[in-house]
Length: 376
Image (cartoon, rainbow, N blue to C red; front, side, top):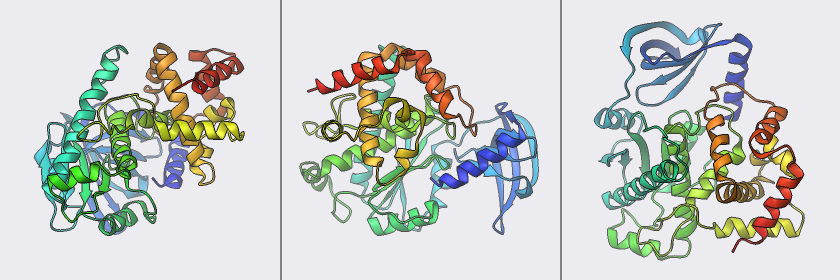
C-alpha cells in the first residue's frame, strides 16, 4: 500500500466531516490521469467537500477527490457485487493476455501458470475459508459476515511478471515480497512459488516436501487471511486498526503444516519461526514495551524493526487467543465498528486496550511474557 496516499486521503476526510454508506447502488463518473471511469457501486464515505470513498461492484475501493468527479447519482436500487463470472471478466481486463480463470466456491482465481497450481491455491484458500469461519463461529461465538461477493486472486507464472504488476500497482520494487493483499483492489496477488514452469500436480507435491516451502506456504495463507479478515467484517478496510492486531492475527492463522499433503491444515498452532525470533529478541532486550507497541505502528513500517515487530505481534496475538480469548473477541468486535479514513491517536489506542484487558499494563505485560517463555 501507498501509505502516503492513505494518510493524505484520511486528512482530507477528517478536515471536511463525513457521511457514511446507505447500502444503495450509486453511479459515479470520474476522470483521472486523462482517463474516464464509469463506476457502479456504493459510496462508502462522502465528505462535505465532495470527496468520496467509493466501493465499486468489483470490490475495489476508490479514493476520489472532488475535482475528479464529473457526475454521481443514486439509482435507488440495492448495491450488489459482481458475480464470479463478471468479477473474472473485470479482473482479466487489468491483466496481460494469456490469463485463464479457475473458480472455487468463494474465490475467483485468474492465472497464467498451470491449472494444477491454481487448483492447489484454491484448495488452500477454501480450506482456510472453512477453518476461518469455524474458528470464529465456534467457541468464540462471533457470527462473522459472509463476503459480499467472490474474492479475487491473481497468480503469475513467474516473479518477473509479478514484479511488473507490483511496480504498476504499488509503484515499488518487488524485493522479497512474494505475495500481498491490496486494501484498495481487494485482491491477493502472488506468483508461482514452485520453481517449475507451469507445474504438474506431481511437481507441486515435490515442492511441498522441500524445506524452503514452509515460509512460502505461510505467506500464501497469511495474505489470504488478510483478505478474509477484511471481507467478513472482522476488520474494516482503511479503518485505523492497529498493525499489531492486523499482522499478528494473520501470523496466528498462517502456520504451515509439514504433515499435511497441501502444506496447511490447522489454525493457531505454535508458529516456530516467530516464537524463536521473539525469544531471541527477549534475550538481547530487543523487546518493545507493551504500551509503545500497542499505541503506534511506526515499528512495523521501518525495515530496521519490522521483522522484530512481526514476531512480537504474533506472540501477543497467540497469548490473547489462548489466554484472553473472550476479552480479545470483544476487543476485536469493538475495532470492527471503526469507520474508514478516521485516524485514532496513540492515547485512544491505549485507552481502548485497557478497556478490555485492564488498566494495569505492567501486570498484563508480566503475565504475557511469563506465558510466552513457557510456550513449547
